[in-house]
Amino acid sequence: MAEHSTVRTVTYDLLRTLGLTTVFGNPGSTEEPFLQDFPADFGYVLALQEASALAMADAFAQVTGRPALVNLHSSAGTGNALGNLVAAHHGNTPLIVTAGQQHRELVIGEPYLGNREATQLPKPWVKWSYEPACAEDVPEAFMRAYAQALQPPAGPVYLSIPMDDWKRPLSGFTRVRTVSERVAPDPGRLRAFAERITASRRPALVFGPEVDRSGGWDAAVALAERLRAAVYGAPLGDRVSFPEDHPLFAGPLGMSVKTISDRLAGHDLVVVIGAEVFRYYPYVPGDYLPPGTGLLQITGDPEAAAAARVGDSLLGDPRRAIELLLDLVEEGSARTAPEPMPRPRVLPSAPDRPLTPPEVYAALSRVRPPDAVIVNESTSTMAQQLEWLPTTRSGSFFATASGGIGWAVPAAVGVALADRERGTRRPVIGLIGDGSFQYSVQALYTAARHRLPVVYVVMRNHEYSILKSFALLEDTPGVPGLDLPGLDVASVARGFGCHAVDAETTEDLEREFTAALTADTPTVIVVPTRPQQAAL
Image 1 (cartoon, rainbow, N blue to C red):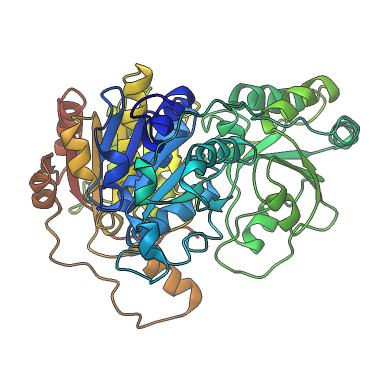
Image 2: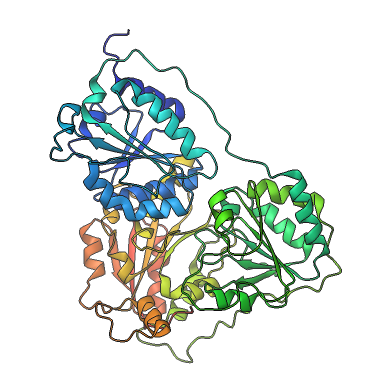
């Protein structure tokens, strides 16, 4: 046994081999034995709250395309991070989430800061949850965690590690493994799908987040053009998988059972690739599909296939499936070209005070660089973003996959950190509602400390506008707590070290946004906006 070789040093060697050299977290006493003598070739990204740490790691893993490592503080830190762990689960993000456990000598007595029933705490939002039976198992637990997180469908895993394990002597760990990251679809079933697609008179394509995550953007464009089929955006998508300015893009599919069914009227076949069937919300009753319409689903997620309310499913990597379909389906030039998505882009005849959301997005459309990334958590203005700021490049749109807010502010940090690691420089734009902004506002500190090129545009409408829209839809008047007076967003941002300004006119917004693109610190631009009813 090499002198001073311990569970900690052996584990760091394994992490180094696996490329897991960036740790996101907020250190606690039960994690300090792991973090002691932190290696110089590793990076530690300090978040001031664990929910931020997890969302940063989520976005970082999505952009780099490999698992990320998160270190949380026992059960308390896991609880803080749980909301954004739900988003990582739904977004199929490969994360290795670790949490410290109390000293093994104390655990039986339920000590202070003990992680009670540790493996149960993060369920069902992790693929695998484990606490090593002995210290010597820690490195192999990381190896399995890595394999489990990465294999399709990818997702977060959880390790609870007693704090005294790290100093136990261990000679080494040599069983480093590789695993497959893609699963090919069944050839016979894929051919049967292709035959149904070729026979369709008016097919519709729905490309979901799995397509962009798998690198299938270009293949999706090629398939749509070969079929001459209308393409719809999947409901409540956390990624965009098809250029939203393409002539075949017909717009969003909708969210409710009724809206989606009505939208698909006239199509004899719907082909859903890389998405659930469907992410429904809110509940508005209707037919799941129009009469006479069939549905085919291709997904890499067995749970998504099993949960589909209608249609026939095929398991397989979305990109690989699309590439194979290109050789199996017949060209559809005889089909009538669908109508592209209408973009009325109506603005007030005179500038408003406060600005309307369309005015804000119109101004941003004039100054947004073409390579910019958008991280969106302005839930009441998503229709305006699609109208004025269409996503036109792969890997350039991110949103929460869970429906909870408090993800996007730290996620923008994770995107920028991942770009820096990849040697890529592109502006990162956070479009955030003033209510959403408060949930993980501590992430601004990390953005400022790392001097990241993030521009946050915070739309200040003084209310939870999306909830007021749902209250109208659900006929629930008199709901308390939907107004947000008295928030000084710019002052809070300055307190965390960001440059922050208020922009009350489109001229102010364009000037400040343009200046922020070349700033050496993150910028928060607060734009007072008029509340509006969201399109549900």
